[in-house]
Amino acid sequence: MTELQEVHIMEDKPLLQDPLTAAKLAAQILLDVGQKHSIETQYGTVTVTIYGSPKPKRPAIVTFHDVGLNHKTCFESLFQYDDMHEIVKNFVVCHIDAPGQEEGAAVYPLGYQYPSLDQLADTIPSVLQYLNFASIIGIGVGAGAYVLARYTLNHPDTVEGLVLLNIDPNAKGWMDWAAHKLTGLTSSVPEMILSHLFSAEEISNNTEVVKQYKETLTTSTILPNNYLYWNSYNSRRDLNLERGGEITLKCPVMLVVGDQAPHEDAVVECNSKLDPTQTSFLKMADSGGQPQLTQPGKLTEAFKYFVQGMGYIPHVLDKRRSMGGLLLHDSSISLPHRLSVQRSLGGGEPVTVSHHVAEQRVRPSPPRGSTGHHGSVLLSGAKPADASTDL
Image (tube, rainbow, N blue to C red; front, side, top):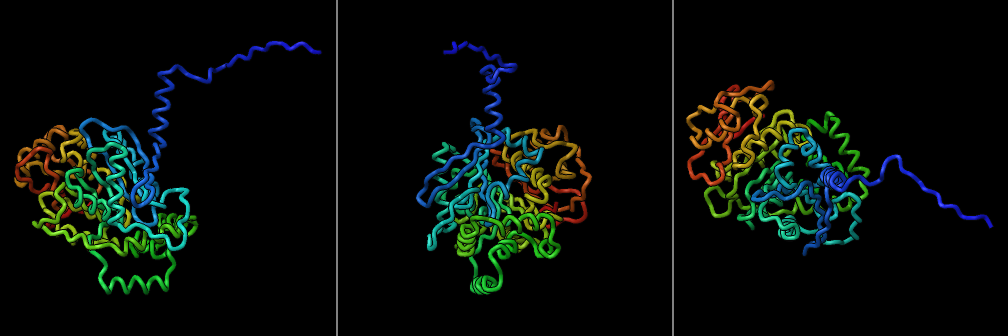
């Protein structure tokens, strides 16, 4: 019998690094890929993806996506934008996927009763309780914007701010309902969802982003689930917002819509129903139906300014690359807010950018804890408008 010999195998490079380096590497991997959680709610399982870790005395940034999308296809372009990293490092970010809309989801059986948008809003408390988040800043697009707005109306004390893209706060009227039914007879599900996501001009020109998302929808393995979410959106109730009334969004709100986007009129109407001292309205030129996909840089600039106005990240604005010509000497801006913005810019001089910004008025969110009057911030450009900013 051959005698067994002991063999020593030496590693050129050890498989395990020192504990501190290994911990840092693991943390970075989690930061890059996100931590996924499946959370049981009364209306189904909700998948959430967490980036970063909770920061003391700071809200979580919570996103909710639109129909036909998931958190990646809706928000990845925005949150992977270089300047957005400054925000990510200051907050924990939580992306919520509506039930059955996440990657790899199982297709619901025929006849499955999908949650209404109101019921989807009722899943958010379970998510926040599971993750131990006391308060949030919400970012929603389309159907997701409606869901976050409904949640905020039901739980105003837990929401510190909202960024709502393409929100339609109204229920569909009879004419809209009939048109939707007729469209369903002549158009495929991907075509209907595409017309909701993108402008007619984008679809007619078959832009690259339209091609990409058309391919995603037509090859989707969960298209029946997408259709259920789509039906819930088209069956939404009216939010019944009323400026100066009891039903309104009481936190700072930034409304965003692309110029000539499918939901432009709805967002304009929503703006007319909200408190003008708490609401900023941004109409973004050359952004189509999905500004977070086509203009992530401009939206990041606006979001940074919005968060800075809430009293977080005081140095969030770069004075060389800001939102374009903030006239800090404008008498309509209250002194506390003007000084706050001046400190963030490193001085009180107007700033400029290379791209044109039409002169409009945008009402900043009041700094946290301030009780003074806050007017509009005037942006450099052509001519003033009532209560919006064109970017």
